[in-house]
Length: 166
Image 1 (spheres, rainbow, N blue to C red):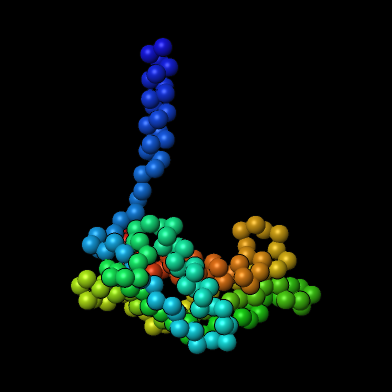
Image 2 (tube, helix red, strand yellow):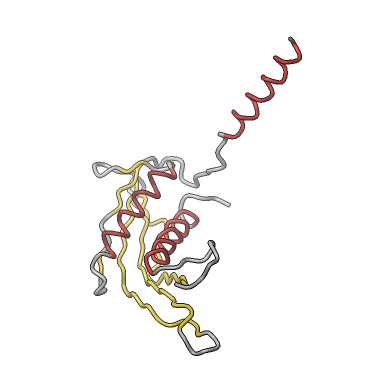
């Protein structure tokens, strides 16, 4: 009986340990963020709203900063400067095999409590290729999947250059 209790206790410890988070914050006084709507200088009209939605969802999922539009501690501003879709590669028969999406962003992350710009990049170019005929599950197959991966990379880039202190 005691032996079974011991195993159950170890199992509970194991599960409790799995909830440990490795998230760090270089700026522990920052608890909230306001994500300004991105200005869109491209003809891809839905791109600004899609960027906004993706970043809001990523911050909500990440959990280090809560979304707040009134009296936030920090602010993220940005603009989409350019969007390109181009042929990236051909197969042996001369057919298009892969496309590449390029999105050029300008982003600024500001600590509103200290009135200080923490991170600014006026020419952040993120790219992703996709292959409509690929059978590999790790390769994006549509333009939309490639764009969503770029949004994910944008969030990761912002976090690595602002909150993380590695």
